[in-house]
Image 1 (cartoon, rainbow, N blue to C red):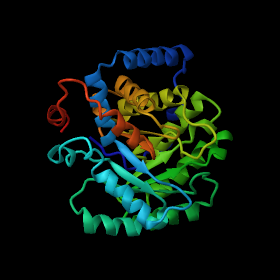
Image 2: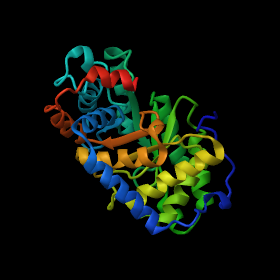
Image 3: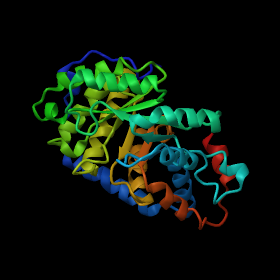
Length: 319
């Protein structure tokens, strides 16, 4: 199966959605809500642990220092040690930590010195984050510098002004140029800032454009947008991922971010992806949740485990 890193040829025909029906969105919403309320204690606990494994633990504060992001990595490497015995706690880690570009080099060195065998990735933001309203040359340079500093993943953002003007080819061209600065081992996640897009159909178009340009993930929001993603945004994103896979046999990941503060918030995204894309998509290679405070809330929820829950069985089933 092809990887998701090589850009494909842009075509306006490919980005146009089949009729996006409000009834279909509502039907999916009803299913997810029903499934959410039917979750047993065991299922909720297993989903919470899987979300921890899919978490991009994020700190994008103006006051962040090297010490702050080193602490972030410490928590990402052993996020549940306070709950489970060390022989199990050390087997679960977050997917990545996401920090500002100026801190990537120091964090990569800290990881190498202290956690040489960890699977936690170092991610950063680029491409004129968070507005996307920067010159292409500076966007490309940001990506290149992040790669040079050792970033494993780069979260870039589209220029929503182009989307409002239906300049989809311009968005594609900018993303391709940024993608070409990422070697094959570096994942590029494309932030759509769906709350800024005029319609659900535009969310679908933006998703398809990003995937055609070679994005490994499409992501809902920057976390700094005025409006965070709602169900009528995430549904067309998942629909586009499904359509893209059917046409090109490429699996592209989904990342939810922005305003996700509780386990319940994260579970809605988790259940939607599971419903529309299947179990294969709720692994860290294809599903991410970007958040800063969510981990603390999940850890708190796991302190009262349902009777009979076995983390050993969870690890056996999910490795």
